Length: 290
Image 1 (cartoon, helix red, strand yellow):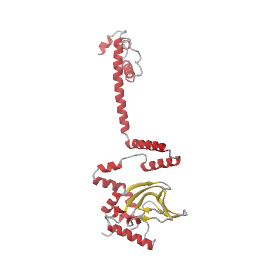
Image 2: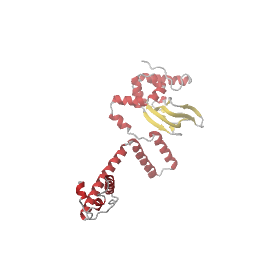
Image 3: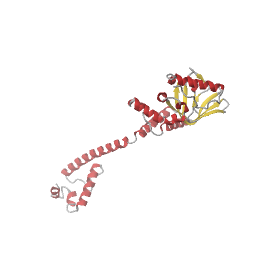
Image 4: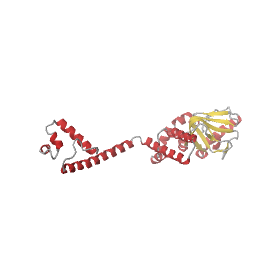
C-alpha cells in the first residue's frame, strides 16, 4: 500500500507527496492528525482535498470516522452511567421532588425540610430495596434483615429475652420511618396504633406547657401500650416529639399476635409500671417463658 501511495502525483494527493521523503515518525504523526480531523469532523487535516477522487476519499473517511466517534462516545456514556447507579437514581429522584415542589409552589421553609428529609433518609443513594428483597430467597432475606437490624437488636433489651424465631419474625415486620426535629410522632389526644423502637436519635414527651416529661434515645422504645389495646389514646397533656433527626422502626399489635407469651409479659410489665413506675427501666422486660 505504501509503495502505491508514493507513486501518486502531487496533483492527486499533495499530502502524501509532501511527506514522501520524510521519516516514518513524521509520516505517521501527520497521518494520525488527518485521521483524527476526519473522525472528529473538525477539518480536512493540513491540506484540503485537491481533486474529485480525493474529495470522495475524504468524504468516506469523514463518514466512517464520525460513525466510529459516535460509537465510542455512546459506549463511554453507557460506561459512565453504569458507575454508581444508586447516586444517579437519587439525583433523578431529587429532581423529580424539586419539580413537584415547584409545581405545588411550596414555601421555602417546607422545601428545605423536604430536602433534609430525603438527604437523611437516603444519604445520597437510592435503592429499590423492596424489589430487591422480594426477588431473593426467604433465607437470604432474613439474613439481610438480621444484619441490618443487628444494632437495634443489641441495644434493645426487649429482643434479648425472645427466641430467635420471635426476633426474626418481628424484625421482618418492622417498618422504617424517619422523623425530623419538631415532628410530632404521636399527637395529643390521638389513637396510638404503633410501637416505636428508636434506632438512632432522640424522642421526647412534651407536656402541654412545653416541659419535657421523658426522653427516649437509641435502644429504647415507646408506644408499647398499643400492643394490647385496640386504640391507645395518648393523654391530652402529652405529645411525643422527635428531638433531632432520628431513625425509628414501627411495629403494630398484629405483629405480636402469634406470640401470646411475649405479649403477656409486655402487659405484665406495663401493669407493674402503672403501679410502681420505677420497677423497670425503659427497655427492660422479664424473661419470656419457654
